[in-house]
Amino acid sequence: MDVLIHLFVGLHVIGIAALLGGFLTQMKAMGQGTARFVPAMLHGAVTMLVTGVVLTGLNQAQDYSVDNIKIGVKLALLIVVLGLVYVKRDDEKVDKGLFGLVGLLTTANIFIAVLWT
Image 1 (cartoon, one colour):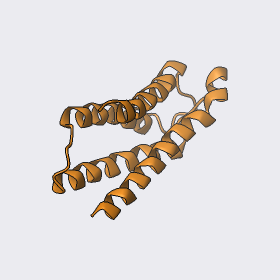
Image 2: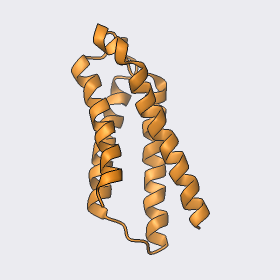
Image 3: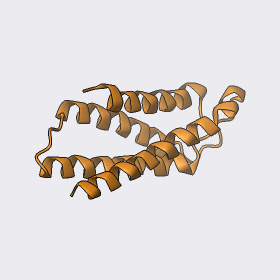
Image 4: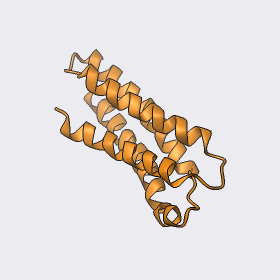
């Protein structure tokens, strides 16, 4: 079971990389006001959601300690990010503030995962 958990952790990291990487590739465009949500950002957010839910279930099935408040906060942030990216995915330009919010929430989600113990 631990191998399966580690596999899903790896997939979760790939989702984070796709979401944050998509954001970072658009930073220059954000400065010019032409940033848009690239498909990698949507795919990364969906990957994070699916793998996060699976990881929570696998950890609870193994009777590992799971901080449900932490998971709830991370889930709430991810749902906001996923909603914004999904709704605005076809727009040619996304407002700088909205685009920056997605990057901020994604980064906050990463730091919550790492620092909240």
